[in-house]
Length: 357
Ligand code: GTQ
Image 1 (cartoon, protein in one colour):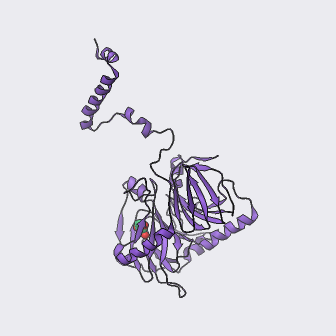
Image 2 (image 1 turned 180 degrees about the vertical axis):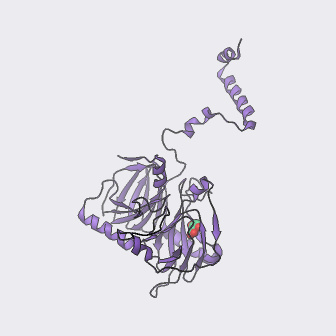
Image 3 (image 1 turned 90 degrees about the vertical axis):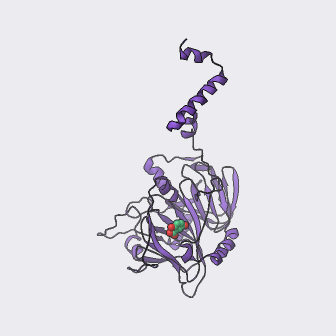
């Protein structure tokens, strides 16, 4: 009898034993049978290990302030509490592709100049009077400002206060750390100087690129927007006018995406950013997308229903909506939300999917 004929008469139990024995024999050669994992490798739809979650700022702020007693910004280099997705602890990730953290800088402190391949966004959550210097230009932080540190740009942060105000400043850091780790493409270095030499006046980038006009001759070639501070006052005004002039989208309310004025694409090559207004009493329809997103609540109270779980949010809270999780947004007050995701990368790969029920 041939081996094939023998197998057809073998009992299911012995067939399983035979397979296991075979897997044991191929393992030392670093081989593994695809047919055992195909369903997980190529799922019918996204099967994220990430959970929806919300971080209440009221609970975190005292702990952040306590961290300032433990370590200086200088010693820490970056004094940040990382927001870890509760379902994937130990990976410093809020989604599979994104990192988020709350960074604190006290009056008089400096977070020393360094640069790295990872791109960063700063969304200012609490306090005024800190600054960041990016590639020789300084910008003052105000709550709601969306600030970018492009890949490989020198950056230092400080808090010198402004107009007599001297207070702790906290911002939400959003970085593509997990993506860069995935590609094993990370480089970093410290600057010789703790604080960068400021080479251009404050507001220079915004004057050149931030008024729906760009200089005829410029040498900006980077994949990141030439604007590195998108001030809240302006974005908020756009939403206020839209709210007066048109009905909200049934799913998103009034939602605008930030753009790179040179391309119309996202301001950062790896991260898309949005600002969204939900009118008071808004009850959004359910939608989902393959780009898991991180939300920072700027104004108002409301509720996010994420994959069947209810999260009541208040200003300065952060919440995460995992990939393909159904999301429904409800506004008790007039609500403003900032959000970011890995959308540009999924678009470049041609894999972004969205559904609006
Ligand atoms: O400000 O440069 O939250 O390098 C994580 C890594 C912030 C920063 C983070 C960083 C920074």
